[in-house]
Image 1: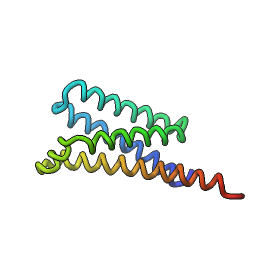
Image 2 (image 1 turned 60 degrees about the vertical axis):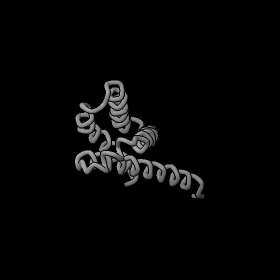
Image 3 (image 1 turned 60 degrees about the horizontal axis):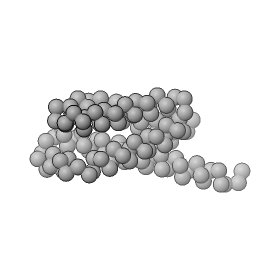
Image 4 (image 1 turned 30 degrees about the vertical axis):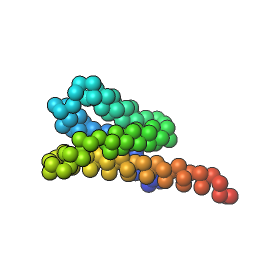
Length: 124
């Protein structure tokens, strides 16, 4: 297995593991309906982590979709910008680590998709 699939899998595992303390951190501040939707997203990351063992390629693309949704949800919330501006170090660190993980997963899977197409097109 090349290093790119390993990097994608590692990023998916990290996103899943990072979600556990994230849920603990946001539980007291989110309304129940919002918390349950975030918890559902975390459950999808758990499924994605398990999927890396049986259907890695499908897992990569599911991870891409989840990362795009999580990224869009993160950057669209003005409360996140207020937390960063307030100087709350743990919340700011959580936001930045989460965003970095999402961006990394998007870039890695995009690179994987492009490199896979290029490899199929080149003559052997």
